[in-house]
Image (tube, rainbow, N blue to C red; front, side, top):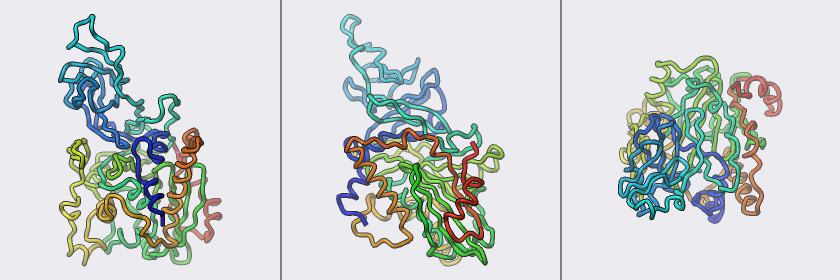
Length: 436
């Protein structure tokens, strides 16, 4: 368990907090490209790391992420006119480009204008892998390279990325994703899973092995974070699920198409998170049938496109809102719980969110009683807290300058190897290296 003080350090992400400053050293997924697909279309409201922002795609196709309020009278730029390579506040007409430069100040006579002295808050952006990324680090630092995750580098159409709102602190989702033991309970089912192309395998040896709720776990730290193997007995062999956890909040989870699937948790603020779910394959682009299965739910939640969500302090963000949520008890069906699956909740993410959001927005980790199967969460906490403390001491995180370290895959295999080291020696080069 963590102390109260350590839990505060882990979970608080605003400007000036240790974890907030650490996250600002990394490129952060901010939007999916589909949220802001057209030039000169309506801007999008978002909050990242506790900062209220607005995003827009200008007439040239460039994406800007600016402070949410006009510096003149602090009016919301969301209502602005996105036109002629800039976002114009409709209150008094001030206009800003994607870099935050004030282009126009029409409420002042020409000889009294001072637009050259006005710079709106703006953050650099890049677009890759179906995602708009932003860098919120110190302006005097050169932004690093994007992490070379396989789904980021894959050609257009070979990856699928979606995003939704989770009403918890970022760490609750992150820790759940790298917990291999809970799948034997929370995600277990009497009925074979028939959802996505990247759904857990229905191979009989794997299905039987997943009934083992106390797998043997072995973890090794790596430059990108850590890799850990979850070993279950499968007949006269072993079923290994090798998960990758990558700084600061990415996962690569076994069982998918070529093992290329996972999630990341981008903090909106201390109590809300944008979850990005990604999958990727290298054999063929996703077709209409694949996308229909994905959008039906199961692995990623069914959602209402571009809904609006009011945060507790009154600020509104534009977000994809899951249909199954706290207000409807995640659509739990007690008959389903008796006859079909362990939870009575349909959909892997819905099952995760029901438990994680029910732990309160920020779980009090000082009251936990952890065991041997919690090694991944314990390690992620320890590594992040160390990195945050190092940054407080002036030691920058080395991983931000090692983008190629992210070129790995998860592994899902039934093998003879009983030892983790032997498994990695036999399969890491063949199954654990990204193709793109």
